Length: 518
View 1 (cartoon, rainbow, N blue to C red):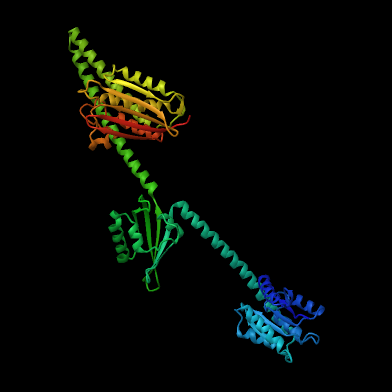
View 2 (cartoon, helix red, strand yellow):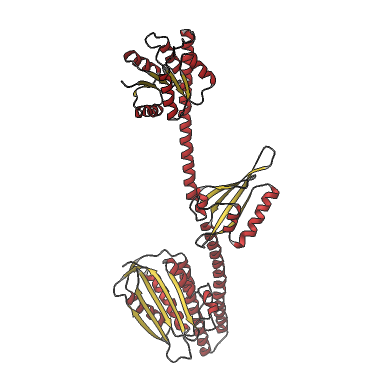
């Protein structure tokens, strides 16, 4: 006949664990969740040994042990108290006074439990009578243990809620760091050990824990031109013992450069000595780039207004002067000459105003897509150019787009007009055959426009400046220097790219790529 054990514990996980330990070893087991349930089981069926926890609701382990020892039918059943590690010697002494055979603290290795049961069962002894206690004292002790259990359970619930809240806050903080593009780190003043959040690793382009971060590591990732600045900041923090903030650049693993803004704060011990150095870094690349774009845009606008004023002032002054001269002249032929000049000046001013207006419109352009037939658009562009006089070049058209495309036709027309006009303007007067070729085709959902000429070419030193506002490349420039600036802005508005290849004396090729739909 197998040995039967009664296992008593209100902790289901603990009860399941010890039940598994003894069941595997061949013991027959019965389980109960408190002392009251255990007493009812003992009344109904015999057991060879009881293993019980102390702190349980309804009837605790002390009272269960007392009940067993004071019951003539149960008093010879061995009892092992198996309870939590936070119990003291007084609890152990009280358990033994109640008649327990053995007192074991949780968590004990399974072999210790097995050996203890074998020892108690293998060495039967005359059971001690429990120390005489009144029912009132037991009731008082039971209320105390019940209150203690309730408090512990409540404390565990509160602790679990606090842990869950903390985990939720930490998760939210991690997400917030990622969304905000920021991370934090800290340095122990005594050991100089550096620890950082997962986000600080990702901010620098690394997986969390993939590298060992340190002050030297952070400095190595700083842009070479900013390293001395960082050293000076660290020196100021150590010397002035106060928080500081600063902007700096970081070189990412793929060699790209990002802009960071870092805030450093010191934490002091009770003696006023630095204990911790806390730092928070945020990626401000987008903000910095937008600020730089805004500054550049403001500078361009200031230049635009200044140059527009001077460019419009000159013909206006000439017109005013010619009007004054004609008012004092009596010769009809001379007056007619003055009127003709006034008309030419006015026409020049109108063209300039149109260019200025179109330039400002392109700066604020919101593209509007429509179906565009490139063959028709190219012919219209050439026709518009010819209204100012027949071009002294031969224009070749190589259009491979036989079907319509979806894009902003007006903007594409402006781009074509300015690029072709520029190619005509810089034709080489020394060459008998002056040729401008317009080639258009589709490639990977892109409209490709190539305007090539055999003109004078562009000096390598000025190639990067030809799209600047009011830049005029040579004495052959007749316009206000807005044409290619307008082209660059228009291409950018359509999310396209533009590139220039040129050889002095051989010619220039301008290649434009614009995303399209068919």
